[in-house]
Length: 426
Image: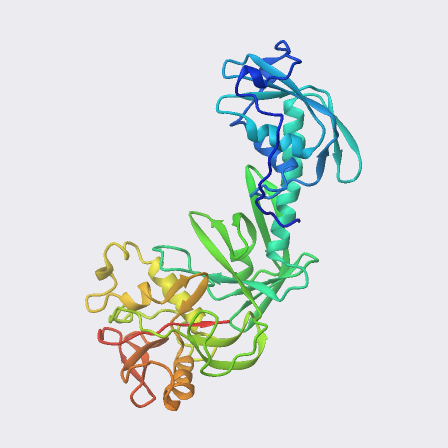
């Protein structure tokens, strides 16, 4: 796919805003019913076929065979003139020079040339629209393929989440690694799941189909076709009544040392030695989250959040968020969580995206690393106070780390004077 840039060019001889600008070869109105208004989809499709400066995905798998003739009409569909078009630049220029309300028609039949070299005769607007749409679908799918699986790239897609109320958080922290041969691997909590992927056009839009092998809960969750919106850094999947977010995660070419500033502006505090499952390093934000609040629902355990291990902070945080998403009415009435704790920290600050960087509450061992590798060496900006982890102890308690002493502790979830400091993997 060619790189798309905006370009400016001047085209003379195609102005037709007054009678003096008309081609001498004035025409009668041959078939006004086949005219193409500026707002018609066909105009956009033509522009993306002939215009190298389009800001959309270009349509490159067909080309017009020149010369051809365009006729221009005024707002009342009276003919203004016929214009011979000899190349793409002339076609672009004529479309650009149309004034509001003007329209064009193409003198059919014309010929278009497919990418295979095959020539196709086009007899009317419907046939031209169908041909260009078919090519557009091919081009967009090819573009999506390149974004999702860049050639010779060490990039993958992190299942991410934000503070949006109700946004599905299931399997947040999982990581998809796609291969050019159509295979894919999903990594989650130390396990890997193999399968296939494909972009396709279905219904009125583009979809990403994921098919993981086996009958595991992971496979059953992900195995379907998702309507998608694709950009270079993020893919948004329509997932039932909600959405899922994939953010691009690429291996860093730079080597980082402990205490160095990370890509998102934090301080690097851990290097696991190699790039696996979408990350090698961890960085910690330079400031605390603003809110001092309770960890979560008192006397209610959140399944799967007991892990203290390095590499589990993000998945813990995702499970915390998923728990609160599933609690009916929680976001409009947090007191429904429990009579003594409303879960403010866990629900509202466990996960957030900033410039497509995924931040989360560290696990116990991750937070201890910040103390050992930064604070104990007089680096970092942590206060000598308790900080929450994403590691639950039991139904009534969660783990904190005392940055005055470097020791972990188990405190009631309802305790509301504890700080939080987000971290991220990269």
